[in-house]
Amino acid sequence: MTTTDLRPDQGYTGGIARLYDLVHQGKGKDYAREAADLAALVTAKVPGARSLLDVACGTGLHLEHLSAVFDTAEGLELSPDMRDIAQRRNPATAVHPGDMRDFALDRTYSAVTCMFSSIGHMRDQDELDAALACFAAHLDPAGGVVVVEPWWFPQTFTPGFVGASIVEAEGKTISRVSHSRLEGDATHIDVHYLIAEPGRDITHLSESHLITLFERAAYERAFERAGLEVEFQEGGPSGRGLFVGVRT
Image 1 (cartoon, rainbow, N blue to C red):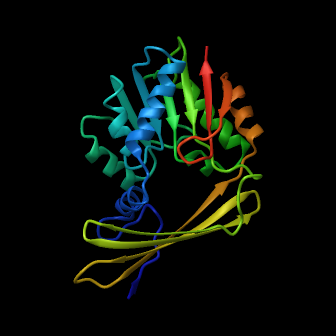
Image 2 (cartoon, one colour):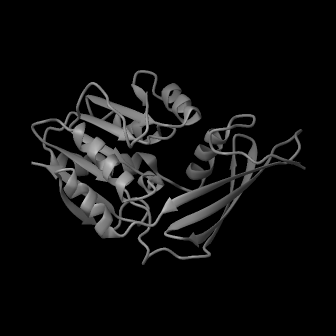
Image 3 (cartoon, rainbow, N blue to C red):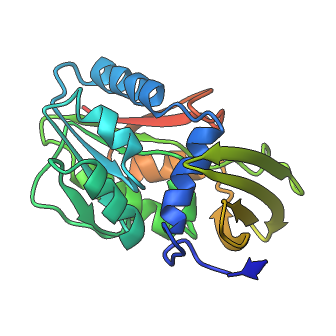
């Protein structure tokens, strides 16, 4: 067995970003349905919405489906590996490099979205405020909507949670095990992968994430400071709900 400890922006054969795709799709994440639901929410809040920016778009799986709905659908991604896959998956779509806390593009959009709890990587209220201010600054002056999928709230997080799955895809068998623990006001998640394929040694990859457990009020405060009227909708794609902020 070979063992390699990697951060998400490093790689092995195929890259951990590609592994991310295989695991989440294998676990049943339905990007097409989620994108359709997201588009319906956007157009309900902004009738006639024609453009969308997906912040922290990852490998572009939501973007792939959103591009079929909106005249313009673009992405923003910090990780070079993720961004490379997103751009190859969506060759006709702009996928911008950028950090959600301080990006500045040369256009505005009917909607700005940030899904899959990526917002939880903000470390404190100041960074959360900065991200929402950037989102709001990229809305069309006439009005628009920001949709954010949060991480768990402190009251809904389960310390010690262990997740496990096995996926078979592209000739590989991938086992993923995660363990979440409380670290200060954040979730510390350790994730380990075993990848087996014929003719190769079994490979071990690991990554760690620190995701802030913001109170619901902290999100609402950030939206309001950005000049957005905010509501929280229960449910959402991952059961963690959605914050929807509208500029009137």
